Every structure is written in structure tokens, then in C-alpha cells.
Image (tube, rainbow, N blue to C red; front, side):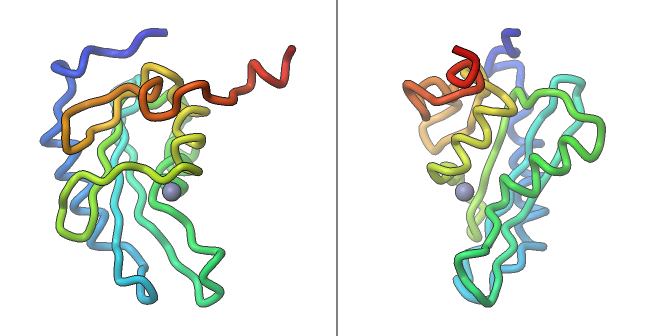
Length: 135
Ligand code: ZN
């Protein structure tokens, strides 16, 4: 499946949704709230915020909540994602979350960066995927 072109995505609306959910993040230890919004292939917008833990290492990135919301509300594939920091600025997903996004959106998933929308194929080159398990 090929996703829509970057120009067809309402990045302002996705960024607004990410900024809104960022304000609900639970980040008392790092004081680094993160919000993320993803457009699913059926037009749904799913969101997530980071959730920290007193044991630090158990903290959940915003993308974890967003992917859970994707499946909890009907599944499908992500086609576009916007992630923001506490100032509302574009934030790149961490390495673990790039793998998570690859699983649920693949190489064509568009991620908004400070330099514009970039496909996952650029953000996670030579990715490990389910095809590697099926060889
Ligand atoms: Zn992450």
C-alpha cells in the first residue's frame, strides 16, 4: 500500500492534536512532555502522550500510547505522524519508536520533522521487519 502524498496530509491538524495530547503527558521526572498524533488509513486520528514511571526505565514513549490507541479503536495502518515536544515543536521519534512505527506504518509512513515530512524509509534505513522472520 502506498500512502498519500505529504502535501495531501493536514499537518497543521495533526500537529494541533499532538500539541493537545502533549499537555496530558505524565512526565514528572524528566519534565519532558511529548505528544504524538497519527493519521490512520481510514482517516481516524489517534494520539498518545509519554507516561513515565518512578522506576525510570519503565517509561512509555508517546508513540506506544498512540499505537495502542490505533489498535484499540479499530486497527489499520498509520499513514502520517506528527510528534511534538513540550514547546510544541516537531520531535523525531527515538530509535525504539521508529521500529514501532515501522511495524504499524511501514516504509511509506510519513513523519513530520523540522525539515518537513520524511518517509520511514529515510528515518529507519535497512529496517528489521516481519519479513525477516518469514525467510
Ligand atoms: Zn520512543
